[in-house]
Length: 430
Image (cartoon, rainbow, N blue to C red):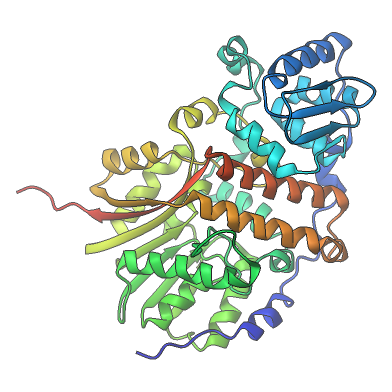
């Protein structure tokens, strides 16, 4: 078959055509820009609890005008202790992130500091307070449930920010998921090839070849669909992002695959037809635990007999997932509303209990995600002025820096992982 590769230059031209007219502004940062009211006793108790927790960690936390605590290691400089304690005392870890957005604390090695915190996530909060989590922790807002309408709103808040924003830090493939490298440390010039390696592994896992009918749930900006079309597959790709769809369609047309690739603005629950192969890359994190059974039943219903599902998913420890599944987090409030990272156990049990799908292969490569995120973060930092020129203010840029560093730290600490799964449909017993 003819291997037609999309043209990199065309990708960059089309990225500039789809730009959000009203980038995220200060109205979204009201909670970060205003320090919450907290009484002196609340601040004092918060300072005491934090000091007891931090003094056991391989960190140095230096408070302006005060002490330094920790066993030594990456430095966190708290410039405004009063505001820092007020935020954490009233909003917990959401307040910790908002305090960074507001510039009340910083770290010369942000990833290093956050990696220490992520590695001790299970014991940062004293056990008595963990038992009272249901009392003090904020609950996930009902407005962010991943119903069909809720999912459209949640997805739009992240992926419709601006195609130009994502093009600032993604490589020429515009792929926004973990790459697979040949070795570490990785270099920016190798990222596009590493993304293609990841995509090809998924397509191989799903058995995609000439003539395959492929359903992709979660289009991104279309690179996987283009790679599948180059193999001769006929691809239906689903997305809820208008911005992503517009650019993906441009890229499909410019690559000459309009007759092989359809990109539909469609919720996975509304999909029809049957397919030889299904691929879904880091989309399950946006489904929500409430709808995981529906998601897996959809995979089963859309899969033709003898078909294969290739699923790439970020995962976290099962106990931590259970502990925090109903809690509203900083990442949900500011980056991925309605999102929830599953555990490997949750994925396998949901597939087993609600479908005839069976996990027949699983491969973890979390270290590769840490490298991917490092390259994105460094690129975003280098292009901060370009983000400002697009209309994204300093608070947003600090938010995005924290998000990328926070995510990288999760993988470097082992708190997060990423897996590629193969699922096949079990034949009913006669």
